[in-house]
Length: 263
Length: 161
Ligand SMILES: Cc1cc2nc3c(=O)[nH]c(=O)nc-3n(C[C@H](O)[C@H](O)[C@H](O)COP(=O)(O)OP(=O)(O)OC[C@H]3O[C@@H](n4cnc5c(N)ncnc54)[C@H](O)[C@@H]3O)c2cc1C
Ligand code: FES
Ligand code: FES
Image (cartoon, rainbow over all chains, first blue to last red):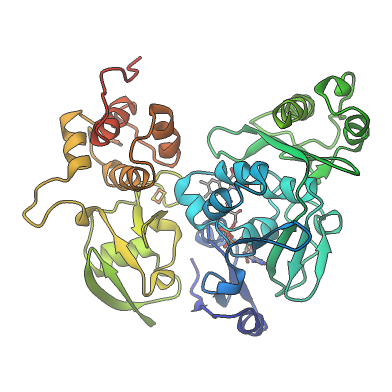
């Protein structure tokens, strides 16, 4: 790692101020950023830790029933504290990486990083969540802008994520066994006004909504409604773990499984 | 350089660190607690697992500065003051849960975290909990057996295929 300074502010306002310095970068749980720094792929002058900011920690319920998660909340806390109000989201968090990764890695870090194989982007897009930052509120549909790319501006931090709670939902992940990231992961959520289907791990443009499946499931919420539907292999990630065609096939399989699991 | 102070295995410890100093470096190089190992340095193997405020973390993927003020427990804090092994360590010895021993500190720390959250885990729960701990020697069965035994459960039925 190149040398950098370290700061640990106690409030969002102080963190935003600290991030104004040139080449300062936010540090969540460090589960992605520290390995990146070790490879010298980034050279921040200063890391601003968000883990000491109590207003960015924990899970709560808003007046409208949405589940609100502080941007610096670790995956293990979401797994435990969201289990009652949004079990599909808690299950997703409970299967990210391994226990030690879940004790440090945060929802804000995961959404800011927007790895094309990460789990939380599927939950956020699949739930039509709102990403709250120090400056504004961003709808999930506008937030994800391609792999490792988001609507966040320089120095903007994810302070909270609000998930409207669906009638039914499930996340099905086909794990890449070495990394435990999703080779393909599908989040299906049924709301009163329709069904949302979000796919991670598969596309070269990052997490996306499978609108044909959404339309079919909105009129008939059963795996059978997906018969004959498929996504094109064009634009799917092709690597040593699986071809684009294989991933395209898995999208349909995991969507069915998610619908079955949601019940 | 900034000064960090933490409690390590019940004793106050402090030292000067750079922003980039990892917790595992601080433990091994400043405090000379070399029981915590570095297997991969890429957050994959779990040889570096320690407890920070009661939670298992990979000490190769946490900055020492982040642990300022924390309560840290390493493998050196597991045995009694007279060197007697704790229940988990003894079970690893009794059930041949180690061969070269390189992964063992991390395995024991993960096992201790599991048993404090879930005192009577099933075999599947033990295997799932160890997802981030890699052992290239044992084939895992005897590690699972040792952890089940340490939790006071019957180990006659553990798979050994
Ligand atoms: C072994 C292993 C297995 C993993 N498996 C999975 C998996 O199965 N599924 C999965 O989804 N992920 C997985 N991950 C990734 C893990 O979930 C990370 O914790 C997560 O991607 C990044 O979160 P973090 O808090 O650690 O962020 P950091 O590493 O601290 O930061 C990542 C990026 O986000 C920025 N950032 C951090 N917090 C914020 C914030 N609040 N606002 C704005 N920007 C911010 C940082 O500046 C940096 O650019 C795995 C990681 C490891 C090491
Ligand atoms: S050395 Fe930390 S996970 Fe391998
Ligand atoms: S005993 Fe050798 S790596 Fe596990």
